[in-house]
Image 1 (cartoon, rainbow, N blue to C red):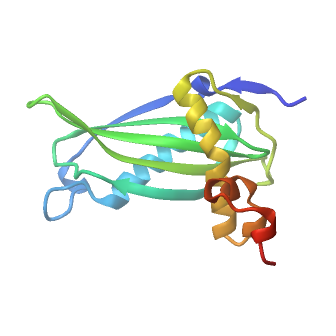
Image 2: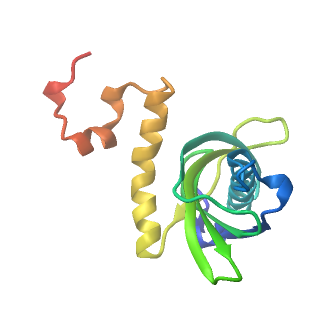
Length: 178
């Protein structure tokens, strides 16, 4: 039987200050710097969950809903949403805060996938994720659909085999053409 671990045990918060070297010519945080911070916080979350070395396998749809300004405090929150055999999906939410004005807003979110590896770099099993809250269960349930979509887009799964995606589009078995 696979070891189990609660989703909340993977929760990580990371805080950064946007400095001049982090910004573009408009004094906004550069997207590459944001991606770097997101990769770090989500890797820590996956390592904390699996107690293993992890490598980034994929990054999904990083959305930038609001620019982050020079001097803002950036808070990144990461948590494993679901674990498969050796891979884990991690959800990251990014908040920007202008401390003098008291304004705080979500600016980014994304899903990163990590694979746990042994000392030789071979994939290794990870614990099963146990969601407890309603929000954790929502992200846990959606993780299988997101995983199947990733696999289809990477050419590692045929669309006809992605049962969770078929249910979204209400595709019947007799409608699938090989």
